Length: 140
Length: 319
Image: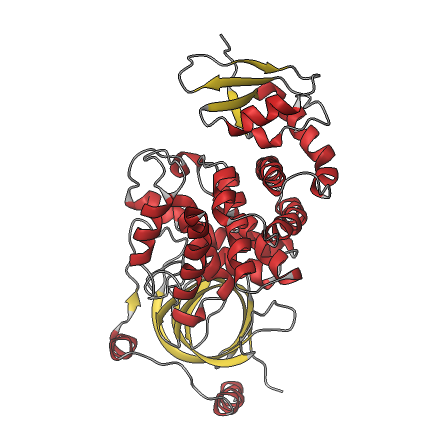
């Protein structure tokens, strides 16, 4: 019941926003096919393994975080990977290091800090976030 | 013979009004050792001052031990000099360059971001003021500035160049000061990079290059935590290695996503780096540098900003 209610709230929120990410064909393909732990290299030292996943979330820049010119407060993002301490998303806009972001997932709310951003294509940014707080969503 | 390391100073920082407070040594290009030119408590007479200013093969130095005294002398009298109309703009530029270099050196060594930003803001006001003075050409300024490979020397020079470009492009007042300060702060992140990598005389390996590439991100993080920097300064620090074709770092954004102040900083930064002595190569001439940079217009550099800087530097060549 709880999951169902959360799903409804989440879907309403997602419906109210427009997906503005411009995914390239190769990225679309990899989102659908890539699963399991992500590859890493000797220059990327990570505390926890990242696992590929695919889902939607609503990313909000809270009022207590700084905002750079032209940044939208709320947008839809694609969840790309998850680890014990972090979450990787794809958004249409650039997010800046140290910015705090609230992520509304299907059945959880996550407060995270931006670690780094990389541009994959126009209106397509890969953002690595460090999870600060995780809360399962409750039914209201 | 002196065993203590000597630090070069510009003859334009000397004044016939106050003793310098540090022993000054001179050396002609053919001489093996420097000789005492002026004792700490002596006043330089105006004739001697004119000779040293004009002599192209004469260099002046102070002992490292006297560096603090010399700096104190410059800082104590700086406001007086800066507002004194009888002192030439070139002298003021030389003094300001020394003050900027040494304040940054001191603040960078202390490694307190908040205090670095505060000091940079104060210096940025003076740098912007100097850049708006039309009686100094860009190339005269290049001539006056030091071109050694220290992060603080580099940052000081970039601030001067950024201010000249911004002033030429029509920026004034607080906006210009903001850009000058951004120039001083743009390489703040290098404080987090191992000096052995920064000063490595040879080619960097992949790991070292990746480490160096972290400095815009590190600088941005430091500035956001200090809460003192403006958005322009944050972007100058974060984006000064981005390229118009999207092949830059840390994000890889391109075109007009890059802030205009950052595009100004990129041109100033590359020009300064190429015209300075590096551990692995000597400085390139202005002409060579502009030619090489010209090939990168529209890919690496903004055309309008590059042309603006090119015209500022070429003003001197025609003079």
